[in-house]
Length: 374
Image (cartoon, rainbow, N blue to C red; front, side):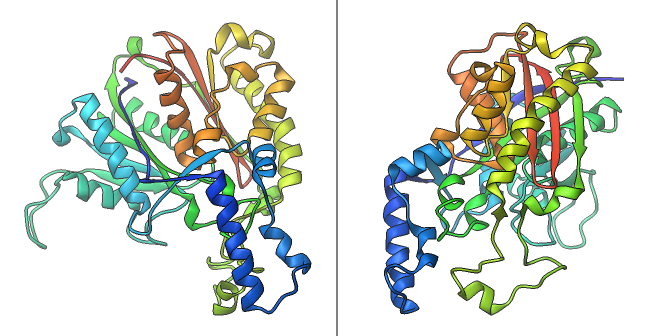
């Protein structure tokens, strides 16, 4: 059996930086456009979804800036840029990349092809002779994985299984999303919160002695009874899109919806429990967390959730909080926070980090790993 090490880390930000001031101005402009288009009075209660200011945004979301993809940028473009940077840092020849796996909730295409296939091609990872009927030269596995905001830690667990079992020796684990494409731009609650980013880590086979992970270092779970808390109601096989949905700014069932109040209360209680279960699985106790874990890489759905959940276990200072600079970046948020912590110099070789994922489904995943300098 083998262990797994991370040898390259890459981040790709979109070109467009959007500040809170720009968000407020955009929502005001949209409010006037909708008001004029539908002949609404200024005090129509439906227009409240546009009403916001800088103080409201700061207090409710904790976000100041976010990067949003241009219309010409897709999720694969962000993943590709991150993968190129990660591969360059690792020094791994492309000929030795045996799998490309992609965590995302915003794939380039609804069903096919997988976004991982697109990145494989654009990276120049060739598997066949030129031409439509070229002979297969080697096998490279590519697939996407979706588990809402837990997608990346869930995929990292899969990658570990692929390498630990000796099925593969090296690959790319990508987490990228263009969340701005699945939120209602007229919604003050969701639109300002989301950001677009691409991230990637190169993983390679190593000896068990140098393993940065471990069989007990992963935890995953779910509770489908709460699936309605976070969902996009329309656009799948359950409810088809209609032109009326797309045209109505007060409907938009084709975009992401969340019961924010219930999610805040649920996650405030659930996150500490998830962390404790992950520690117990390793043979540790929650009361000793500060002696064991040096950095918490939480999914940053909203800064209020981070504060509420971390205050309950007295570990807010251990959480890498990047939502102010990047917003909620779903699949990309974990490596983004990890890279930010590395850049700030808060980690040294041997420090333990814990990814804590939670989100729609509802689902949860944790990954405990040992930091090593790239």
